[in-house]
Image (cartoon, rainbow, N blue to C red; front, side, top):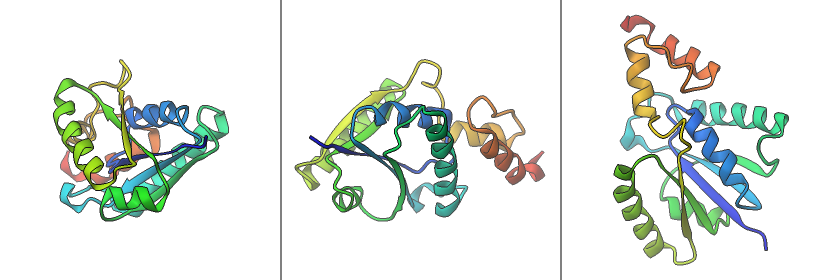
Length: 169
């Protein structure tokens, strides 16, 4: 049976934790859609097109190395996650858990999504040991004050963050 999974996120910025989750999630399904969400409520640092491009670049590198399935697609979306999941025929949502503190929010979201779309299951993956503390918010904070974020994000994103925050230091 073919399964399409959706791994949604703002990816602002994309981190090695996100990429690890994408790699692992791609092994659980026939097709993985990485859904880059507009999410203006989070006041993203990068616009939707930039974030989608960052994800596409890194996914293409991973495909070239053979570390991720060729059936991973990157799409941007606006609006309700459950509407987007229906649009791409996803039967599974992939959500990452870094710490126990993530669980309560993610559990509420999974319950709301289930109410909105009965056929959509949420699968939780725990962050890998090396990435469990990495959050995009933390990466932006470190970059804002001139800290080295190269161990958290791919080099093109690190360079872009340095450029964005160069006048802060």
